[in-house]
Length: 208
Length: 208
DNA sequence: CAATCTACTGTACATTCGTACAGCACGGTG
DNA sequence: CACCGTGCTGTACGAATGTACAGTAGATTG
Image (tube, rainbow over all chains, first blue to last red; front, side, top):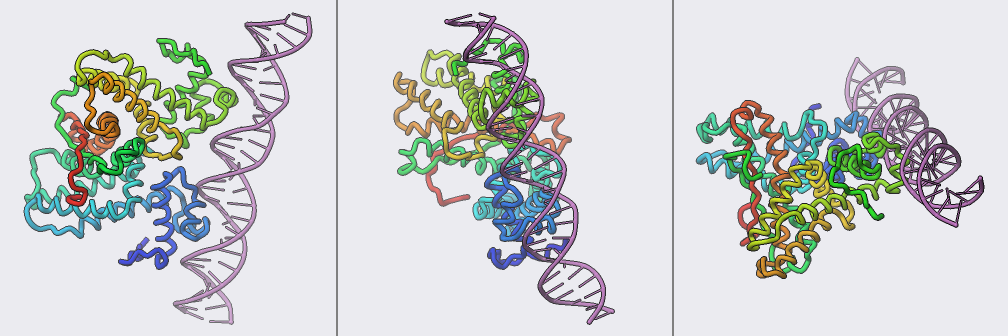
């Protein structure tokens, strides 16, 4: 479980079979969903046999877990690359930027996240929980350094970070699909940008 | 294929077996996904045997198709109940409200839609296309009566309608999940409201 | 009554899936 | 050399799943 295998050049050929399996699983899980991708497909994509997947991960569920831990790692690494200097807004902005760049560079992560978030799934050891914990750590660190407000509850700040980051990414494919349905406008005009905003609910009963 | 079976009281007992199957399928598809629900589960929920499902729908894929057509029907009926009088904003608002009420009354539709949106599912007349066509018809009707602007492309207006309606519904469970992770704040404060907005993209390269 | 159509049941079958397992090559260590 | 751990292959198997099909009861029609 030492996971020494993270070189800086993730060229598919050079990777350990274990890493190749994990990458293939991420790609396929993102594309077809976890339940929609047989282990045999992962094996084929990774250039190994099914037996090896079992040998390394034991269970499909464990493979999924490894994929999710890898995703959390990518978030943590992206945050770590961002400079932690300046005002609270500076730091938060730099981290937002770093995470956005990482997500833009690996669409499979976005696709997997979209499925993981939209599927209630088995609710245990969830990716959402892990990412929330990561974001909470982040917010907690900023607070301890006096760079984040202590007024609003921490859950709300985490929520803002995650929803704003992920909301747009999740909704964009739906928007693109709809735009595609009316093809004539896709050439001249750029697709509209989706803005996700959070608002403190004043009254829960009125106006849906 | 005459589908006489839509009484005004959808009490489960009174429905045709065919309708009961369709409803059970919608519920289970929404809850566990199409691939995640065996036909045997649908049969059990509907109180029939698997053979009858095959007898009525032929194929699981055809059953899914029937479920989706039913969903489109619900949208169309909701829109039809809204008063079509007053200014364009009035009409559009009334229809938005009617659809929102219908979605609030049947969460299974929302859940199914959430899943349907993220599964491209093979291009064919899928649910997003059908709903887009419905929304386009609606916008077209308003335009013909001079109640909707003819300036912006029709795809954009459809996009606004659908994204604003569905975006909030899709993101809300994610928000609730995150709030739940930090349980202490869920008691006193109501969960924040998610606002989805569309903005014409001025420059695609800057920021994010 | 005979014939037929329809809603419906229960079984059977081929396929696909996750997983278990026996075995092979090979490199390091006593 | 013998031993063993490790990465890896290929086969096999039980469980689950979609679908085909034969058959039954009851209402309708000639």
